[in-house]
Image 1 (cartoon, helix red, strand yellow):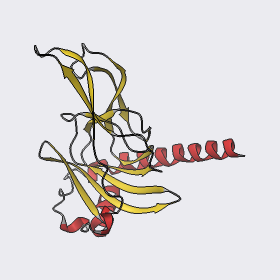
Image 2: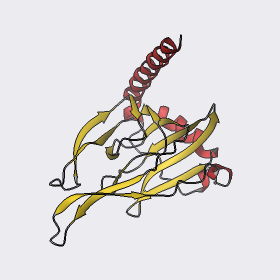
Image 3: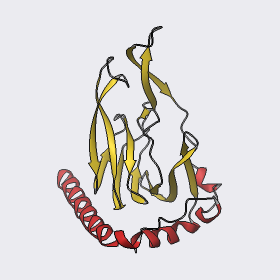
Length: 204
């Protein structure tokens, strides 16, 4: 089973646990780096729907290996909206390009969703969170950007393997989702192949 194989494989990989509101959200496993790109395995065990919208320090590409997730993406600023901006919701099942200048968040994810995330090279533009800016009466009047310090690119050198960091147990319904996972991987690999062919075509 795909989820079981990924869970077993990541037991020995450097792992970083990411939480939102004190609850587990994401398990990040370091795979390696090549030509300025960094490769991770991400396992979603929650959502960041309650957290601020955020961007990234570099462009990224997410290849879904199992499951899927719902993403909220900022399309425009709107002081009258609860978050100070207009959001669109999209379901991600196979491949997702995440530009560094896109503000988004994962609203929800299927149990034990796994992705291969490729990121880099790091850009100079700041990254962080945005939230609604309110007046004294609590009315939204705009948005505020809150930059964050990027994590050390060498965190994996000091991180413990996945099996020792207290990660979430494997979801009990793994067997029932095996067929859907296989189709997801086939579609994701096919789409990734088309992206690579297209990129090579632009270079030739």
